[in-house]
Length: 338
Image 1: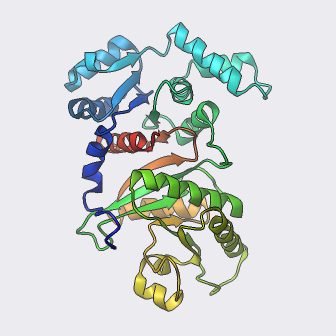
Image 2: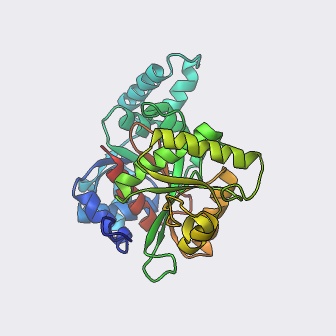
Image 3: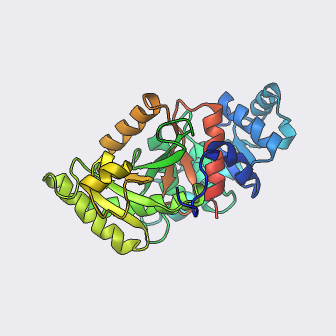
């Protein structure tokens, strides 16, 4: 670790305080979910963010009270409210004006709390949204793309898992970005470069350190050949043109990306120097399998998938997320908000 880099040993513990320094208005559309109530209880008590829950008001407020939260401290919005549905429909009609969607289809979407959350975020009425503990990633991504949309100059929505290793771990203290582990199945070279670009931009807000990007492969600097290796090499070239000031290298095997001694042997002169903190995987299979193995066998905490490349933050959760996971992703969402 260089002197210019932050100490990451307290990354998880420090998220609430960093988010509370600028409390954001965050929408949680799965307002009936008990894990959401537990996360909101902590958020309200510590002033971490200003929650907006979508759900049946009477039921949600009673559940909040039962969880130990003052329901008057939480904004609860009824997703069946006619005004909200009409606002969402108007937003969808504007966003989908160039498409031939049937109004009946958009009206059905407008009644979906995920789309309503997307409208609130996309229109600037909320700073961000967190969903996915009860809905699929596909549902969350559809709402994010439809109602929020991609940032300027971005053509690819992608995601990162933030893999957190404690100080006592052989890899710790560290926070590694695994990208893309949730959205793009078979990225081409341009998409891989955009995925890496979005991951670096998100990491700057979430972690705050200097990104070192490794484009992973089964080959290191020409040790093997194959179509996927060619794609990775091209992606590195494109990424360097997009972010010339960011240390990046590839194609690299995992050990050459993460172990300085191995990097010195396999990739001498690598700008990453075996100290990568953004790992760009060649496809969704490799990334998704890797994050789950590292989480369950390697003992890392996995936060995400954090969606990247959007105009405003709308983040996904694993359906197995705990209340603590939800709170951490909400804190990350607040940090991503401009």
